[in-house]
Image (cartoon, rainbow, N blue to C red; front, top):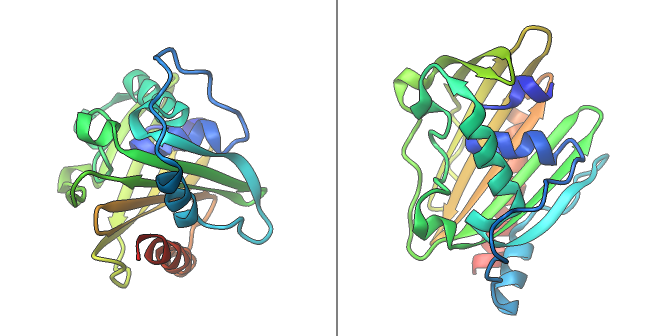
Length: 224
């Protein structure tokens, strides 16, 4: 499934390495600037507790978003994926290549179980910002990921509004042998953005909405 899910979004590329229980390789860059103790506590409080039946596969990792090992691994994977429409690989997600996003304090955690995985990131931006909706041309495209041709088909979900802004998508990734579904949720409260990806053989919208509700509760408490 690892190759099948890689390449749909930047965060999904991160997830392909982290949620499988494999720790990312150490980053080659300088030691990242760490958030203050208060900011760290706020970011950790915004993360989901371990879901029932799952275990922590990675993290929590806290630091500047662009220098987190998970983010750097995802960006490296993105550079190696040859997408039919390159602009679609990171669409509808926070752009870690932008300096104001890369320097923002963030926390990432991943949970896993036999049935699938959940990866969550919380980023405290310098000012309120939210990714644009997925472009129409990105609803269906193909990419070469590690020599495997993967077809991605994404639809926008009508999730009840969460926080100040929110969006949700369901993507089917079909490779040569493995297929997977990826549920993607983003929620903004003030200048804090929460991104969550749920991967499995089948991801049900109602289950994704419930996880989004729980994530928004944690986000609301942390940003109150």
